[in-house]
Image (cartoon, rainbow, N blue to C red; front, side, top):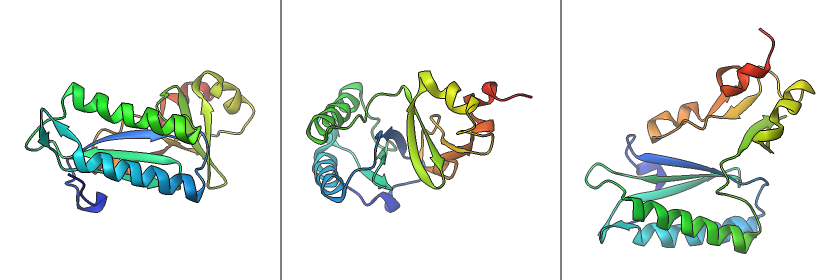
Length: 161
């Protein structure tokens, strides 16, 4: 069952998905409609779970489930990924590929393949203080750490000590 994201418990499990580009208003509206409908029926073994999502800057998707009564099963998680893949196809945007890094450049979200991120650091596009998405976020209470300085992430290995 869909619950407003702000009303989800702080211990709700969260998955972070990153689009490689900003969605336009029509695309964002389509995504919101589809995810709301999905959350209304998201269940584990036939039991509805309190679920929600948030779309940040029309580019970052936070999908949340309250597991306090029922844990999300593998099948229920697979169903969420299936919906995101359907959205990928209809919107022409990559959402589920985890091999990318999102960072802020002049308050604009940029997304780059992880394999080429070292070149962005060496070119000075990403500095020690550049905010990057923290891929370790697993629950809503940690969303205050969604954006962290690159020096506090795995990218730190690319900066001189």
